[in-house]
Length: 225
Image (cartoon, rainbow, N blue to C red; front, side):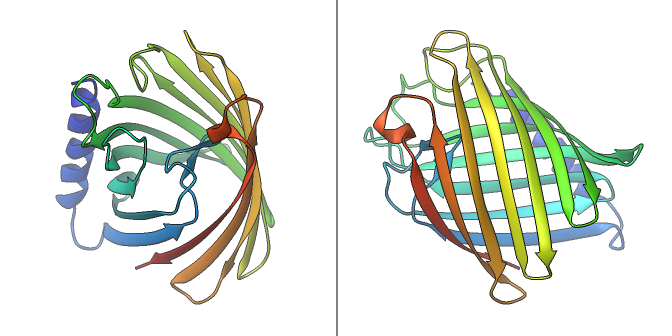
């Protein structure tokens, strides 16, 4: 399986976090209902609603977690399950994040070749209420049978003018070795209804000519614990 090494790395980081002392250990969970699960500009739920949930553990600078979402590819695939882990640090005023993400698909056809993993490097810097950043994701054997190597490059920015408000935007380019490259972008804002519940309204679009990649507005209600 493509993601064996990625899953092993994520589980190793999870074990490292779990072995830490109680003072260093942190755990959180989340659940969300979204009107459309959009990943890099493409609907993963056939433009229908999706339910999502995840759990994260941290130990100092090390983190690991799992996240899942319902999907609809019209081929029997039921869900996407992500396993991830990484290391966060700071240097010269920048927040740095290095990690690996494994993507598993439950119920997918035996010939789908959907499962894959990516390695990640990201950096961001905050100045007052503003944060700007960028990220790189590389996969040596990407989703599906068509593409092998893939690289996703993103620039993003966020603005938090008040305690309960956050506005953000991102633009990215998905580079593929066989399929057409495309540009995707999104812009939106979130509002904290309570300490544990927030709503996000976001507009997504791409320059790829496919109904599942067309412009769309998405509403997401997310709870954190």
